[in-house]
Image 1 (cartoon, rainbow, N blue to C red):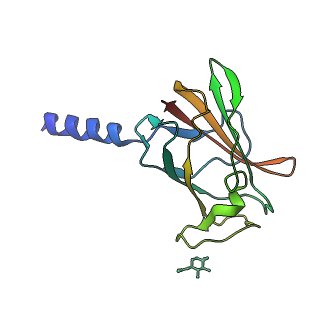
Image 2: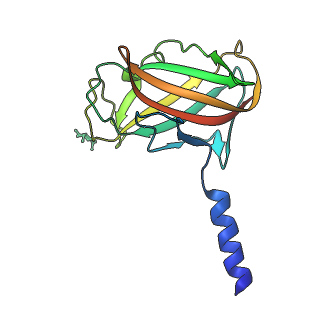
Amino acid sequence: MKFIIFIIFLSSSCFADTFWSNCPGSNVPGPDYIVSPQCSGDRCQAVRGESVTAKIYATPRAIHNELITRVTAFIFGIGISLPMQPPFDNACNYIHYANDTQTSCPVYPNIQYVINVEMQISSLFPAFTNTRVQVEFWDGNQRAACGQIIADLI
Ligand SMILES: *[C@@H]1O[C@H](CO)[C@@H](O)[C@H](O)[C@H]1NC(C)=O
């Protein structure tokens, strides 16, 4: 019996996704959750020159007319910007309702949306391991959302 409880504990902790979190010290919303075949447990792993897919579920707290995407990898603590090519430079171009029907901006508060990412990772990006990658969406000069993942880029 104790053994079975131990197994259940072990498997539930293995399946808990800790690869994403809210941005530290941030007062803007983070993701509700993220699902990606490249991510499980405590880590995401992507290959330069190959594609990644991810569904980022998020619920805005305000109306936003644009969601300019900024991705920053903190390599040895130094923020390196990873430029996004169109259409991924603005999440309004690929935002969906939670039922996967495509929509666009403006997005409205207290509705859950899903940002469907399906993009090729530039082979010009630097390789890194066990690195914090911050993903922000900006509406003008206001940050609308911020989340982070722990990732390897090989
Ligand atoms: C998906 O959700 C949106 C917003 O709630 C709704 O307008 C749309 O009709 C839904 N589409 C489907 C196929 O259920």
